[in-house]
Image (tube, rainbow, N blue to C red; front, side, top):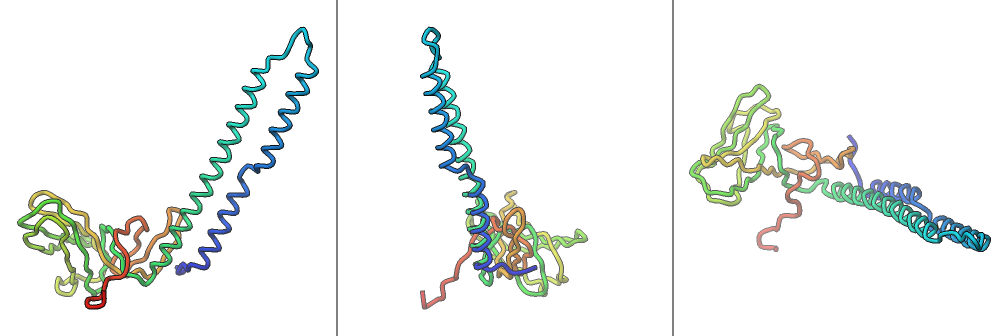
Length: 226
């Protein structure tokens, strides 16, 4: 899988947007069509039978309908252009995260022997909060986090201390109050893969994660400097 870079994505963004714009209704063509319609309407009125005048209301209705259709076509084209622009901006943003530490909402971990940190956010206090890791064979390992107040709860999963073999594990948090807080895992972005559903980040300790699963990114302030 190739790493995405800002330059290539910028060029792709320009090409995609230009392609969409080329599909939009040409404003000058639409104007010419409207002018022709008005010319025909005037010509018919000039040459109408004085004893049976043409109802101008029908002309005006047709003109209004044509203008509305052209406006809707242009709005659709502009919407497509904006969607392409937003998609490329999202990809460029994701590419800029390569090498950065992020937190993502995750339901699984990819353990390779190194510790993985993260956090969960409890809506209510609990006397017992645990993380439950389940391997591919369905074997569960509980990581007790003890009694916790409502709010953010930081945790660290040390596979060596827990005796966990390298591999993929599902992860969930639960409390004795019946709450299942969302688990956020911290990791470094190794590369970005572009898919039909948007950018997909490859994150150390997590694996493949869609861009929209990011919950936090940015540099961590260094104590004493910031």
